[in-house]
Amino acid sequence: MRIWIPRDASAKALGAEEVVTAVKAEAARRGVEVTITRNGSRGMVWLEPLVEVETPEGRVAFGPMTPEDVAQIFDGGALALGLTEDLPWLRAQTRLTFARCGIIDPVSLDEYRAHGGLKGLTRALAMTGAEVVQEVLNSGLRGRGGAGFPTGIKWKTVHDAPIKPELGEKKYIVTNADEGDSGTFADRMIMEGDPFTLIEGMIIAGIAVGATKGFIYSRSEYPDANEVMAAAIAVGRVEGLLGQNVLGSGKVFELELRVGAGAYVCGEETALLNSLEGKRGTVRAKPPLPALQGFMGRPTVVNNVISLASVPVILAEGAEHYASFGIGRSKGTIPLQIAGNVKHGGLFEIAFGLTLDKIVNEIGGGTASGRPVKAVQVGGPLGAWIPVSQFDTPFGYEEYAGQNALIGHAGLTVADDTADMMAMARFAMEFCAIESCGKCTPCRIGAVRGVETLDRIARGDTAAIPLLTDLCETMKSGSLCALGGFTPYPVMSALTHFPDDFTGAAREAAE
Image (cartoon, rainbow, N blue to C red; front, side):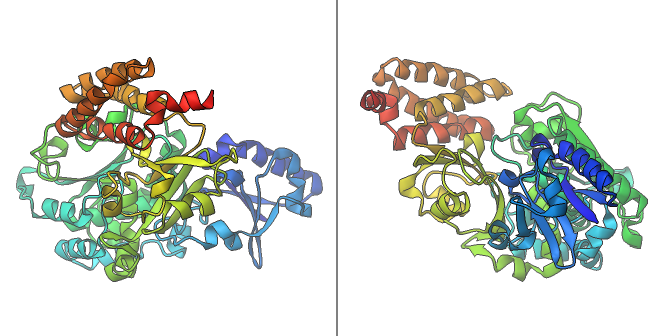
């Protein structure tokens, strides 16, 4: 009897380890021989720990499982949900990047290969670097870390950048796994549930641009992801996926996992590179771009985890297949991370184009509190608050830019009608003040003055509102990186869509 119990951090936080212990004890009491495999999460956080039992018809799901209820795994009961693949949350998705997450043993290269893994790399090994770059260009893939910059253009810049290998010069692939935005967890989930997808994507990137060395820059707050990632890298070395002879091709690709101390600003690519080089994590002025002078001054691809993890399916199925999903210039799929005050939180991968109304009210099931939705913050703590009146906006880069908003990393934080939007705006400014690296004045000083100005407004000084608006414009246009430049989005969207929360009218009405 094979039983799957997630070792994903969210499942562990909800009691997965205790469930494992209880299942072993129950099986021993019954004299039943069981094999427990620790997999990644299927993304249905409200059902975690989600236990699955292998049957001839497919896996049967039980959840949310507790140690007291494990007898139901053997006898059936109210927690039996039927075949996992038939659950509406999974059936409604288009899983390209997360196709194997939760399905395979994360550190088994054999299972990875058996479920379609390495097809993209095998094809890439038979292509020139320029051909691989063109394939990624044709797919329309854009950086999933927040900026939405075309991945293929970045790769082409590194591919075309001159170096002198005879002098020991190299190009590098760096994965930005410093996922620090509240309400986002896609990077963590893929590293914990399907780490070989990321490794395969990085090797393909190396083939494309001529890089033979890669780094994954992760964070100390992700101990489970780092453990799984390190184990997968070790397996990859032993089984010939990494090293001096990738899959017997003669190609070279070495990979290291580096763990940072967890500074939010190190999610910005140049601060990350400084940290990777052993320096303080402060932002670099651009130009030069990292694509030309990145790690150790050499041409470097810096991509987000999901960007690189999306590459294997593009090479395996072809650029045209990937580009057939989505809308406009937003091609492919996007892993929505639904969090906050929502009934069904979790990860939902789907083609671009869904409206927030469908995402929040149909997929998410509305608020956990049962109260009306007031707004959704899209793109992490620096994303804009989208009011219900704009819920018909299709989920796409240009469509959100048209609403003065950002998709960011596709994290969505739902708030009900009791949320105080001025408090949310103050949180954004305070967050920026705490996390600023201090390199540029608009971010370092602006965020502090922003908190002070919002406190004035909270005391009833509405004359300070124009000053707040002016300050946000300065931060937006004058900051060196997205931390200072994007902080005005949650502040100004809250002020624009919910002015009563700033003038005290809402509080007076409530009283």
